[in-house]
Image (cartoon, rainbow, N blue to C red):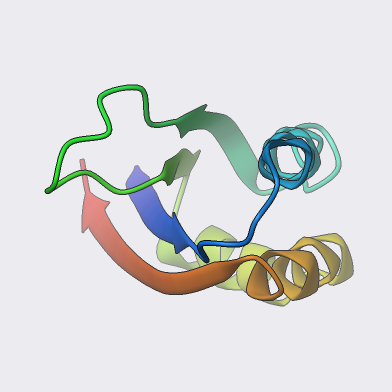
Length: 96
C-alpha cells in the first residue's frame, strides 16, 4: 500500500467558499479514479503557527497506481483549480 499525503497553504486572499470548493473537488475524485483506494481531505481547525491549511490523505495499491492517478485528467483538472488558491504545498509518499 502506498500512502500519499499533500498539504497546502492558502493565499491570504482566498475566500472560505473557495476553500470548501477545493475540498469538494478533491473529495469528488473518490470513485472517479480506478487506482484511488481511499481519500480523505480536511481543513485545518487548529490554526497554529506550524499547521498547514488543508491536507489530503490518499491510498493506492502500488506506486504504479499513484503514478496513474497523478496523470489522470480528472486529477489534473482539480490540480489546476488548486494552483489558483495556494501559495505552498508539500507532499510525502510512503509505503505502509
